[in-house]
Length: 516
Figure (cartoon, rainbow, N blue to C red):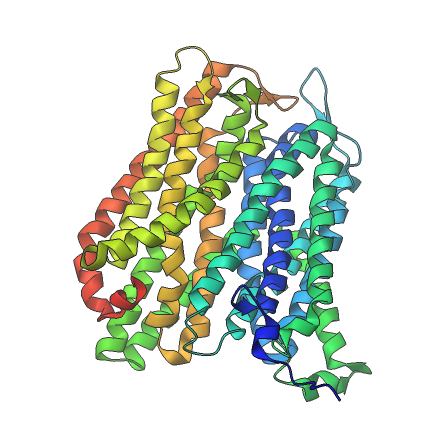
């Protein structure tokens, strides 16, 4: 009889668990669907439904804020009840339905000679509900699939960091392909093709994950299976969780249409979180632990500024590329949304270089606060490149090189901040509130998404049938915004740089672990 024992090498591929590559392709397709849809969103709103820049930016801000806030709840439900695997499958199903719902275009809006706009309100409600399904789907999938990657490796396994590196390559590969393919389909053949392609991508991701269950080797299962099997109100608790979650889309459906409600919710949640951190630091901590929590809180506050500037990519920078940019590179015209692919491309190319550089610098490797300060200055300099590009363009369009340079600088900033951010949360948080502080990190990101949309409105341009009427008036609007963002990034970078010695002292050596 053949030995049925599974040997370790049989479960590995290229030195890593085979399950890692299942998660790699699942996340690649999920990010393909997410970024493909997001790249088209501002154009779909302003060109097809004839939203004003203000309305389009705020809608994207509300949507993106909810996308980053809901994973806190999805992660809690997976930890306590469902387990990562079931949560990911449920999230994937919601994402497929949401993206396919967005493929329904309805009728294009029309603008009369007097400026009155007539929209297909049924199509818009289907669109809003589709966004709510995507919000729910990301909430159950995004945080949990990363957590499942961590479960594949035992504590102390030296392959963990390289495993996460491979996984994040999947994220950026999905983003790169999406902003090329979905934008091309959407702008060439119609919005339904672009959004539909995003839905098909997510379907492949879900299929990949379900078919790869055997490679998970039992990882990611529920910690509370007996609770899931018990019945309440005539239904298994597991199905009640799914039903309650689906009903929550009715709330998201309304919230995504009401920017004031989202803004108020973020302010209340942020205020309560900050007060709880202060309370916990004073009442439950002393000495080293208290100072580390203070250091983490300061860093989180500065990340809000960074991401608020960085996330202009999907609103003001995307519209700038469409209206102001000469989009020809080497004689080939690139769609406005396809410029977003430069961020993912630069991450793929530069991430190994940055990883090598930090190690090579040895004792000269900048501490975490200095890296965050560099990130803020780099994102500011990216907008400085756009300011320079506008100023040297005369009366014509701005050369594409300046936007590419801006994405290069922004990506360098991202690589200086993002890789150590989540690690800082886990290592600086007191053990009893690590989950809460991870939630605060996501809440900060959600807040920055909303702030980004408000900032983008500085460059709001009057349009007729979705087209900016006067090139030079539009250029001045973007110049005003980009100058403001340039000074903001540089100023906050300098402030954090000045604070970095204090923050380093408050971290009590954790900084050395983060910068290895």
